Structure formats: structure tokens, C-alpha cells
Image 1 (cartoon, rainbow, N blue to C red):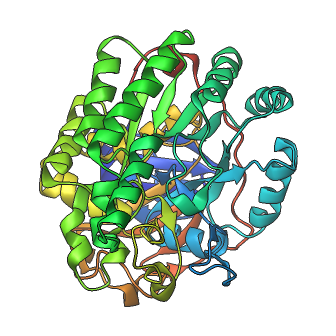
Image 2 (tube, rainbow, N blue to C red):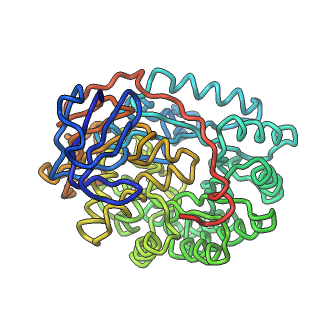
Image 3 (cartoon, helix red, strand yellow):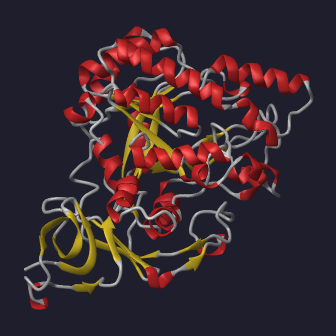
Length: 477
């Protein structure tokens, strides 16, 4: 007796897409069966998803909740972005069932302490399952390196590293290459993966100086600061450093430029274990969007680039250099998002977790002819594989968690902030989505159906992860 049978004719499984019945028992998928193998009477509940698209729950591998937003003016009020309760509820409505956030190490704390602090932020406050990357910052004392090793072994294998302070006001984020070298040694030995925000800090800070000297300090000039050359220099330098540490695996976060795509592709061609992540902001918007009213809503760091960079990101998905599409989620109000007007005070990130899956289906499958399998890889399966959650997550397969999203072509909609569940604005206002989730299931529980929400804030569970050896040794996806 199953708890749920979901019958579909476009079900995306690791073995292919077709007509399958997804049979759920408790938290897990008990069987993927041919249609009609089991009668309705053999399940407590049967859902007919024929005519719709059935995929594993979406995975967003890069979000920030309860995230610190510095004050614009010295002595001003510091704000925090919305917490996991808001972000995860929006994620469920958008067909995403797993989120990866960050536990940020600070100089006066151990890594174990910052993980415990983050657990307090999330435990019993989240509708999706979730995990953490460990974010390191600044100079790394030698005594922290064994803590990194312990964290990797304890299920936190992805270590976030900044090669830039991003803005002059955020001094202390950048990790120098000597310290990165030491971190890479630990990652390689312990089975971790570097999650890298790579920009050349000298170029970035030089361009801040240049634009300030020239009086061109409006945020519409951000693409000149966080430019393509900076991405090219930093990507190639960090890759070369990782190659010198016996091929330390890398996950390049928010790839924004053609130069970053090219650097990843060149390294993968040599068999180096590197994977690229882009954001749907970069795929959909360019620096020209900064000139629109409230143009800050399109921005995240690094900056938006040219249409030629967008072309390279789309091509990179097909060629393998771009493996995942994330959001860099920052869920805040429009007033907070637009409070900065300068190149050095504009708020990054976007409230984009909810529309991600539907927008990407529209852009990938309907407009560009991607297969359903390729689309599913980019919004779910690849993140699970790279980040050590597969096949528990990211797969419709026997033994996998029963995380299921049903996309309904009959629920085409115009995206508006009023219909979303995140914030009072959306960069995708007016976008015509060809599908929308009609059902989201988390570990066998129907969390959302036809817009009705059934989740409990205690439903989310924290994930411990271990990156597969194949992922760490060669570019297998």
C-alpha cells in the first residue's frame, strides 16, 4: 500500500522522460512504475498529473536568508533580509524543495559555533529542506584549517571563498591567495569543494577609484567596476592555483561573463573538476536594465554584463561549462533594494526564488528547445550531484526523497509581485511564464496544490552532504 501515486505522462527520471507512475511510501519514492502497474486502490491518494510536467523538486544552491545588509550612511541602521520562513514558503510555491544558504565564519568564533548560530536561524523555521555552505572571510588563522576539515567531514563540504571585498565598504571579505592555497590543501585532502566568488580585487578597487575620480558614481556604471576582465583574471588565477593543489575541485558561483565561461571550459577540457553556476538574473538582464526606473532591482554582484555575455552563458549550459542556475536570493523590500544609488552602496541579490523554475522552463524548453532532462539538470539534479545530495535529492527514482514538482502548462501566468510570496517587487514583473507549479511535494507531503499551501514551518530538515569522489576528480556533469 502506497501513500501516494502520482500518474504522469511527462515524468523526468534519470533513465529518461516518459509516462510513469511515481509511487510514494512515507518520505521516499518506493517505485517508478509503468502506467497501470498499480491500481488506485493501492494508494491512500492518487493524483493525475497527465498533461503536465513532473520533475524532482527544484534545488537552489545559492541563497541568503536572514542576511546582513549594511547601512548606507555611517552610523545608520543595519537591516536583515527576510528569514527562511519567508524564502522557503516562496520556494515551495515556485516548485523548489531544497535551499543551500551560508554559515559565515567570523574571526572571534569557531566554525562549529557559526554553524550552531545558523541552525538557530533555520531549525523549525523552514518549509523546505536546507543546508549550508561554510563561508570563510579575510585572513584565515592556522587553527581554523583543522576546523574546516572537521566541518567537511561533518557534512558541510562546500567552502565559500571571496577573492574580492566586492565594495570598498566591505573590507575583510577577501581571502588572499596564500590563504586560499592553504584552504585548497584541506579541501583536496578532506573531500571538499571550493565555492568561489571570483573577481580580481585590484581591478575592481581600481575601477571604483577611477569612476569616483571622474564623478561617475551612479549605480548604472557598475558594469565598468565589476567587469569582464576582472572575471577573466580571477577565474584563471584561481583555477591555476587549484590545479597546483592536485586538482582541487571548484564550483564557480554566479558566473556572469563570457570570459568566465571560457575559463571554465578550458579547464574542463583538461579534465579539471570545475563546475559553473549562473543566475537567472544574468541570463535575463543586461547592464542596460540599470537605466530603467528602480534599476537597482536587476543588480547583483558581480554586475550585469552585455548581451554577448548572456549568449555565452546560454551556450555554456549546452556545452557543460554552466551546470546550475541559482538565484543569489536576497529577499527584502523594494525600499531596501533601492536604497543605494551609487556604485559603492547598491544592494546585491534578488527576490527570485519563486519564479526561477517557471521562468527557466519558459526560456529553456519553450524558447530554446532544451529537453526536459536538460532543464531538470540545470534547476535540480546537477546541484544535487555537485553538492553531495544525489540521488537523495534531485532525482525521481526508487529510494530518493519524494520531492516532486508538477509544472502545469494550463497555468500560464503573467508574473507580478502581487501574486508572488516573497517581496513587494520582482524584477520579472510582466514576464509571461509558459508554466507554473500546480503541485509541490516535500518528502511525500503535499506542500502546495493549485496555489493552496499546506506546509508547516517545521517541515524542513537540515541536510548533511558528502561530495561524490567522481565529482571531485573530473568534470562528470
